[in-house]
Amino acid sequence: MATLPLTPAVFHILLALSSGERHGYGIMKQVEADSQGKVTMGPGTLYGSLKRMLDTGLVKESDKRVDPEMDDERRIYYQITSVGANALVAELERYKRIVSLAQERKLYPKNFAYDA
Amino acid sequence: MVRILYNKLLGFYPQECREQLGESMEQTFSDLYNEQRRQTDRGLFGPVLWMFIETAIGIIKEYILLIGQGDAMKNILTNFRSPAIISLVLVLPFIILELVNRRTFNEGFPIPLFGFLWLLPILFILTMMPIVRNIRTGNSIIANPIILLFRVVFLAFIAWMWVSLVIDQCLVF
Image 1: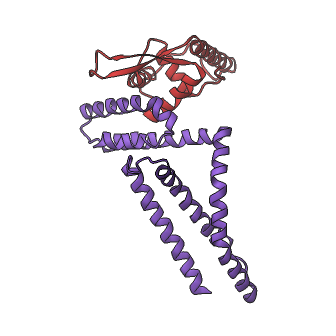
Image 2: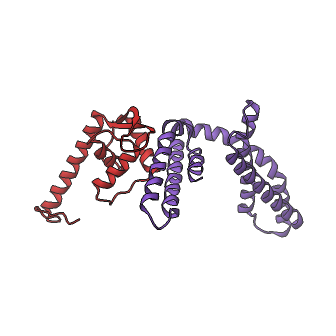
Image 3: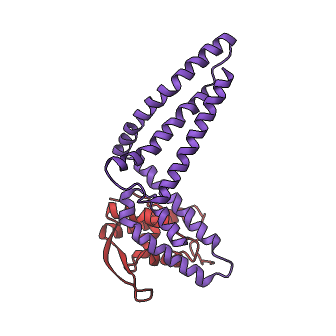
């Protein structure tokens, strides 16, 4: 069982996998896209986190297969598990509570327009 | 060439990690390298160096986590005990000589120097251990020539440093 709060790397990987199975490079690209390029994950961080996530059951490996958009090498795909999905929701709830608290204390506007 | 070097770097991961994720990491490095080659006009040195450093940090993290686990720590302590005793036996005569000498001249004992003299043979033995273990079990010691080369250079460096320090101390005596 994953303990909250999740590390930023684990959180971003779960978020990237919430929209579908991905291989390592695919996860990196999705994390970069989700964070508008603000989070760049290297192989050391990605696979170190993935190993621990596999050990704690947050993600699992799916079959090795070829990515049609890339070369013909067979790749291991990773998918989020129900444990991982629950951990992601719990973490998002935690963020939500923090944002509410910040809004109550007028540290953060209620109607917020994201300026990228 | 860069891919071969990265593959060698992955060889430094703990065995379990290497077996579980090595192939995927190699593929991902290859993907990132190809992406950089397609996109960048400013050369590949910076991004490739970043990937090597980031992976090296990942390797260190894995070892730290491994050490944090009970069994690994126990193994390290068990492996460390014999070299520590052997090293102490090697350094003890010099410590006694130094103590006698210092008492005559009423000077303090140079703990850092002898600590260093004690640590060097420990490092030497710990570096030697895997090579001896491989020879004993009949495995080829040149299966990974780059790691072997690093070990031999490191062993030569330690031996040179230790002998230099001892000779230096003998001249003082």
